[in-house]
Length: 614
Image (cartoon, rainbow, N blue to C red; front, side, top):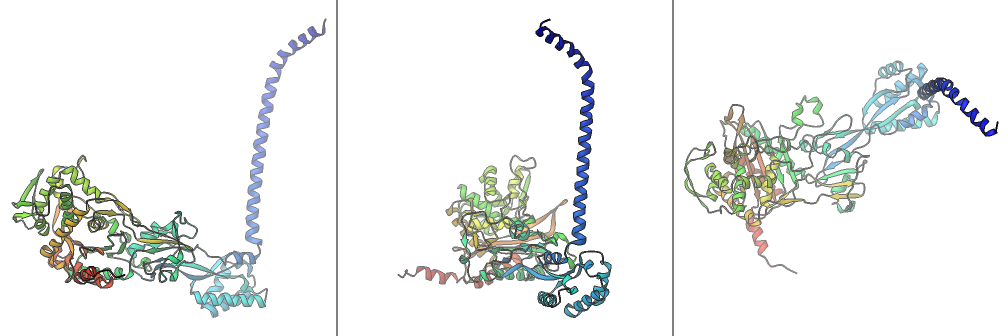
């Protein structure tokens, strides 16, 4: 038989045998190999766990005590940046204490324990018996805490003593004592601006206010300055640089003025007491920059002692950005702005006030339930006539009216750099709950809810010639030698400069005729009062009101915008803003004119008229 035939026969003969007999054998071998691999992986994993545990055991029991000592010389928590006001006054900073810890299992002899106990009693006043007990109770542990919150100078003296003793005697038990610095957040102004600043928890994370909003920046290992356009540290005024940069190298310089903050907090507390109000808010802003000069609330709290005061946590929220209220008649300036800017009215447009008007399904009355008769837009604002204001809103039309309300920033957050800001409540045409009657009530600040910051920021736009700016509280961020300044940010133009000028004149007349208690001799002030009813599930409360006054001065050269808000003043004294919030506005304005060195109108006008000299 040829070789090729034999080859084919052999191959054919073996194929059935291979298919029938080798398949079960191969499957069994594969299963055995998989089982062996799984067993091997399990053994390796067990061995790895054993090595890790062994390493931890060796570290805890046999690591050289000197190495443990050296690791504990570092800060227990990373430092946190300093917060200062516009003049460099510290509002928040780290204050350093020392804590004393010990490698307890390294001190084995009773006489060594007694030596340590006696020395600590002598040096820092820790009772020797207390130290002895701690050393005995933790005799088998590599770490124990002996004391905390040791004053910085005392702790430094103990460090020096231990270093000297260790140098003289290399085997002294004092070498197992470590004194390490511990940063603790401190607020040297106590309650001043506490709602603005916020505070730091025990875990060194910020809560509320600036501490929360800038938490990742203030941490030394947090986010840095990402912008390219930064200035050098020398661009800050020398007083501001007194405490900057801090140890953390991450600091904040505020637009807030500590003196203004003190003024408004003092006046707010006096007003609360005088009118027996339940709470209140005062804000001062720069209209041409959006910078917040002061922001005060009552009741307040002291961040240094907050844990010992049993304070309701709700008090930590900043009502200026977190609390909603119906603004009442101060909102009429927004309605007048819409009317002027759309051209449907002028300051002298005549109106007839019959004492009531029906808008949608609701009848609207003036607050005093009287009819003014023949009047005009300026007089209606000065006398705070609800009926005429509703007529203006009707002439503007619902769509245009709410377009302007949105333009002024209502119904959304301002974007201020403070934690917990809310957007407000605003119904508009197309919303399920909106009706035509809302147009009438919203026109004089009823049926919508705003924050105090939204309200003052909208009036800043009037004082700023029609430009709405984003409010801010941090004027500059500092990272080591770099400074990033906050630049004024225009959100949008809400009305023309001419409209702003006309509305300013109307608001001047309002102070001169309707709110004389807000006037200050020698200065023209543009402003408006508001007495808002408080809604409840059963309807508006009869004798409970929120009284506010908002305005800016000097009227034709605004240097500040000021909002005063008093919640639920005692109706037995007065429930009207013109008798409560307006005089508080005047008193604060007098102090601001003096503090900011703003001369009376006559003097400033004389200076402005003098020819320029080369």
